[in-house]
Image (cartoon, rainbow, N blue to C red; front, side):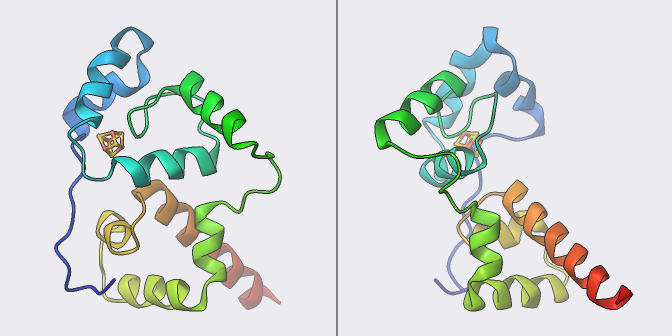
Length: 136
Ligand code: SF4
């Protein structure tokens, strides 16, 4: 993927955020997800992060648990997406480059085909590692 590709915007946003964490309104949230171009990535990231609640990628927490069971995934054998980015020389270099250019986490997430919380976690881990090196 190159940075010249068109960016995909999520179908959800601040105006609809409450729907995704209110079990009584999960159906409305899932309808929004059905129109979202990021749906597959969003679901995979939520599975990787073991999101405990809410609708992500059109699936609520009970559906995500069932999916994990179907895949036979072990909780401790998954590499979270944020860690995979940091461990990939190419993705890690791109993350650092785009941040040094002042790109927002949302925009970086689109380029790296993930979602904003993953990039936020990756950057936090990167900063923590840098602080440790500088303190040594
Ligand atoms: S798939 Fe993810 S990013 Fe898209 S609308 Fe649903 S929760 Fe939002």
